[in-house]
Image (cartoon, rainbow, N blue to C red; front, side):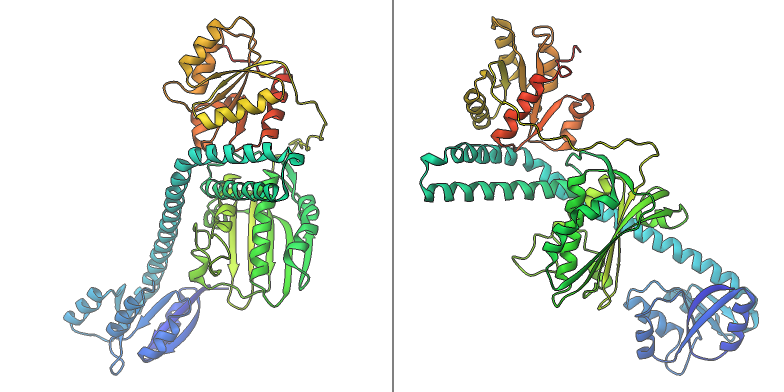
Length: 520
């Protein structure tokens, strides 16, 4: 079987000789013959590998065809195959953008020219694809940096709002119904603000993931009941856990978020009902094409395919769907961050998302995640344990944001802890030097003026050798990594947090025998 080749032939003069020569070159060609501008314009809507044109076909020839191709911004190399023409006409053709000029008496050059132009076209398209990926990455980087810049202050505000709302709601018997309703609405709004910040950080890959070994077949089966409620009764949902190997390393909560986002988008694409299929599989991505196209390393991948029978998308829409704030939904029906967040989560997990869609023919969104190494142990969820959260230990709190510091002090003292407050590193050092008792735990903000949290902890080590440490921060994962907190394995609590989460983490660290201050 020959090499496939799709050719638009402009004019019919010499068509048979050209076809015979391409056949001798090993090409299995498909032709469309056009003789005018309207026919060529219709043909340009399809994907063609090459155009071959005579110099003049009545009033429409190679020059007119080149002009139309350039106006429509189509990457279609054109080779002019003509009778003998004047040198000035050849120059005019090449200046107009013709890939080559061949006379009908010298067709032996044709196959070499075709091979050259097909190779050059592949390189151009690959370069354009990489440039588009780079532009997309720049957009995500820009918005991600913006999100990271505001995340610290915004998370501090949300910590205060949600914290005090939670404290007041814990005294339900002292609240009137209207007060309780207002507080619940304040807390819900703050939580939505936190979720929006998390989405911004997630698609830009600045949100830390808690990866563990997951069987995707089991995951899909576990969440299908919830997905059925999401998509509604008018949509038939089919789940096919067909992956022969399905172990991956991922953040289960984030992965569930991705699947739900894709399922909701599929539901919205089927307003009159339809069929939603969620299927897992295993695939080998080669370095020759598939892995390169997806922007991942070659190897074995587990896939989750979410397929709908909805309205589908045109190529223009598909080229923008992972951009932040791009949405096809009307005002008030989406932030445009769902798919951008999904993209960020999957890329951060070492995978990719592929899109396969046609108008009125439905859409398949396919997630690719690297297969976990053989022998990787699974980490199950920790069983919930009812514990006593009160204590009498001494805690050093170092936090430069006054409102957050006051909230933490109020929460910890309400649970019986003795709290020493410091706003900066030097003040914390003075407290440690003058304190007559052992300090059991330091709760330290990671990024502070004058001295960072990790630098302070290293200087406190000789003064309080048995002291444990809990880092807190409203900054992004990028900033935390920069200060070495995650790499050190130290306990960490991300803002915004609720009072209950704070006291649970404090009790957990105090009860741990591993989390003592590093000596260097």
